[in-house]
Amino acid sequence: MRSRWCCGAAEATPASKILGMIPAISIEHLRKAYGDLVAVDDLSVEIERGEFFGLLGPNGAGKTTTINAIVGLVKPTRGRITVLGHDAVRDYRQVHQLIGIAPQETILDGQFLNVREILVYQAGYFGIPPRQARLRADELLERFGLWERRFAKEQELSGGQKRRLVLAKALIHDPEILILDEPTAGADVEMRLHLWEMLRDLHAQGKTILLTTHYLEEAERLCQRVGILHRGRLISLGTPEQLVRERGKAHLEDVFLELIRSERA
Amino acid sequence: MIGFLTLLQREVVRFLKDAINTIAPPTVSIVLFLLIFGVGLGPRLGDVHGVPYIQFMTPGLLLLAIARNAFLNPAYSLFQSRWFGNIADFLVSPLAVEQIALAILLGGVARGMFVGALVFLACWLLTGVSAAQPVWALGYAVAVAVAFAGLGCIVGLWTRGWEGVGAIDTFVLDPLVMLGGVFYSLEMVRGVPVIEPLTALNPVTYITEGFRSAVLGGAGAPVLIGLLLTLALGAIGVGVVMLLFRVGYHLKA
Image 1 (cartoon, chains in turn blue, cyan):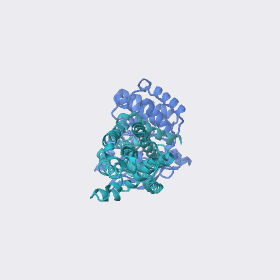
Image 2 (cartoon, rainbow over the protein chains, first blue to last red):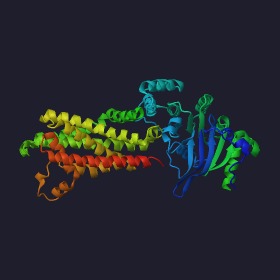
Image 3 (cartoon, chains in turn blue, cyan):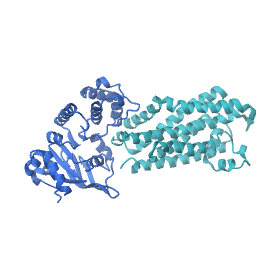
Image 4 (cartoon, rainbow over the protein chains, first blue to last red):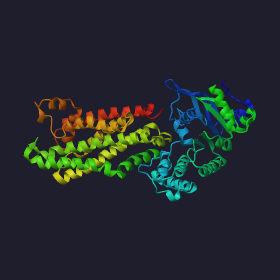
């Protein structure tokens, strides 16, 4: 049996809805189908401003499709997405100005640009004048420990350095909303802890963060609310504490496994 | 505007930084054509339409250089960005899709004109040729570059593999340009089987003949016909590119 809302409605409802504020991201009845394959099926969720939200799910659950629909890389089959009140399809330019996205695959424009140039060009695409773009790039290179590698090419970077560069690139225009697709995938323990610390700092600075992950510990430690996707459908939504408490489990991982197994049954 | 200029700069820097693969080969091959057919065989062919053969073929070679490079730059740049995934850098930026399309297209125009300028310099040094109607010739060259850059954008969006760009270059662009009066005029092949109908039916023939007239100072009619044809093809090409970007053809899932 599918259970769209596993926890108390009042607790699961974001404050933005109760207080009538504009949510950071509002997804209404999103559906994305590729022929017979339904990647996302009637997904509705709101993420409030300043929230740290995690979208969880096994591989192929529709996490990446959902975030790509928010930034316009995927055309929804049905449904509507708004970002701080702007329609993601009609007002895509305003929406893009508000969002920084760090994709899962660390493919950078590094065939002919070095690390610093990658950031400077990215700043330029966001309309930042050259002098400011260089200052902003240098600031982020320092902050993310990449200053020494600023003249290196992408292929000369380690996996961890690439992840940090992707994050720096997403932050180049100081966006209000940060979307991270599997930010710590493939990172070793030390790097993961370091990235978590960075994300906590960014959240403390007021950024709204939406991350996808299949590391349940990551979601438990970082996210204020999580949504669990399975086969494109939202099967659970709430704070990690709520989900754990209501299911009588010790960890989010146990909740996740139980939900996925009951969906498959 | 800053975003658009940044992307245009990226497109230009891309081919300048990789000049050994983007600028040198077409320039060298065209200079070789000039040496072999112009300097080597040209004097034996005598005058063509009142000018030495080497001067006759120079505008054709210039057109070949401009068209081919204007085509190749956006075709490879767009496909490369799609292949590696860094096209998302532009697509998630506040740039309008039309601005992205225009910047990539103008990157092709820039490469076509850059290589064209190098080839013109080589031609001038070897043949002493200069443009009799420089304003018309320059405007014409830009129109040619826009038309072929448009085609390059379409191919860069359409292809699903690296071989797609090469195939269009080899099996479509090369025959069109080679059989389009680069080395001969339509008058010279009257009565020659296969070559005459292929040349006569080829729109590039009229584009080349017009450009040749603009450079060598011939009659006005071919310039106008060729230029109008080029502008029409360019307008169709740019229109199709804008449409494909708007619908997100092979850009958005």
